[in-house]
Length: 442
View 1 (cartoon, rainbow, N blue to C red):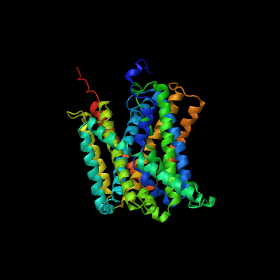
View 2: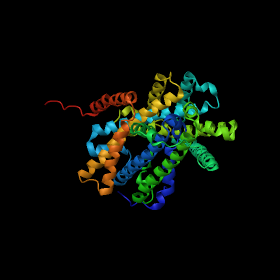
View 3: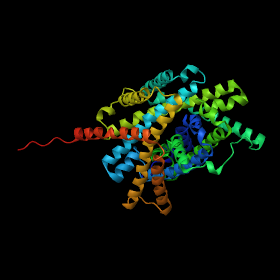
View 4: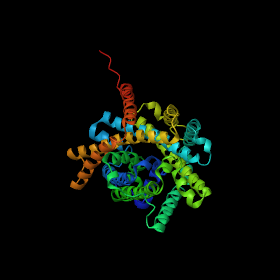
């Protein structure tokens, strides 16, 4: 790694990188997911602990690989170095699929909380229309260039921690007031491996983005130490906040009330603080979701653009506007996102959120599995130095990703396989177009 650039030219220090990690991870998932976990009780708490541990191990692997090869492309580059171009393409494609399906999930979550302010949005048809409208408004913002997208992101990032901290504080006050008597009782016979597996898959989605902690070394001071530390601090800190928030709602609210709510945070606050406070919290969560969606729409366009420049995606995606925005990549990706939402428009917002969440998570798990295997392969080839502890972490990451994939269910898994398989013709079409023309016979 080249570390010769002066520190003054590297604007990102440790806490800037930690903020980047947490800002990319915290969106709408943790605010809507408790409704999906209502029936699981204490299994949800155990599942969250497993997910935080698994996410931390994955963060360790990404941090090590980023220190070894701090270049643009992240998971795609690691897979290419370990396995060659086709597996690397599958990793890149799975990551891209997880991005635009995940963005559909974020937009659905935003609309779910907006329905607390505008009840007609709880109807499937109106919810689908509003979801698509949000996506295209923010797609147009990103088409104006990175600076416009960054302005929107700056405004929303400051607000996203407020509802999270408010609910955690309220839960702590309620538990302290009655000594924990209001908590759902713990019964060992209710704990099951199958339930924890499903929860571990569901709860991984709010942790997605931990790989964005692998910040390019050219922008980070003392990158060899800063990037791994920021990755682990940001992942663990976000995971602990998630654990407190989700556990509070699952263990303090009646499961039938929580499971039927389209805005769990608002439903939790309203009995204590009143309806107005619940609506304010719902508005803050919706703003958080829009900020997260804006940032990930930026990424969903930049990824195919970068891969097209590398020759992995069709060159058509590499075109940019006068503002430097990858407009074609943004538009095509948002069209795919729109089709996904409209094909499932008959589901309620809660059902649609849970379904899309599983597809996005499954696609990301394919990428995480490949990255863990890539680290082990590079270690075996003598190209990546890893001690016994890090080697064990990579092995655990592989086992964790493979295990979590089993919790997605048949329908989401079939959709994931179909979406991944759809990329193979794109790969061979790109290879065929980039192949040199045969020389004329003499």
